[in-house]
Image (cartoon, rainbow, N blue to C red):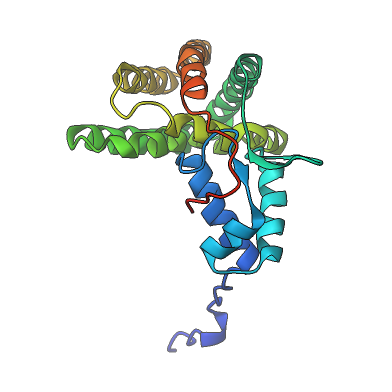
Length: 238
């Protein structure tokens, strides 16, 4: 008997993104990549004109990005790209250390093979980018490595908690110098973490990851000091 034909109706239709979703993507990317600086004033009118849409989806997008931590809304003052002080950077790094180390242990317990496979791919991609001197790829690949740790975790509460700082961390990574000693140091640390996971040594893997996160704190502080933009409501590079 011939196998039943698959109905064309079983193929899911991709829903086109709404104007709000498109605005979220564009504004988020501009903030993360540093095209909109820390502390920079955001004008709904300018953003809407730049994106070629009305102010309503822009307003909705900014409210969404506020929940992601990328935008700050100050009554009577306006809307701004987020800005972090030294204490806030330190707190984010401590929070990140706790969350990622716990996620790592959970992933090693419940999904070790999938975790190793995902991290190995990140290492290979970063090595390839390094050999081609594609320095602009490092922030994205570093983000993918750490996201893979979170995604390996079976505890949904840990994953949800990480979203509180995930977007801000990505923005900080993109503001680090393209060529710096952190890149090689980062690659080395990532490799040692994966080696410890392969050896099923959770304590060592967590210790290396914790040290790696702590070592980035100073680099993030420097990035915050160097990338603060003046408050301007007449610019939108999206």
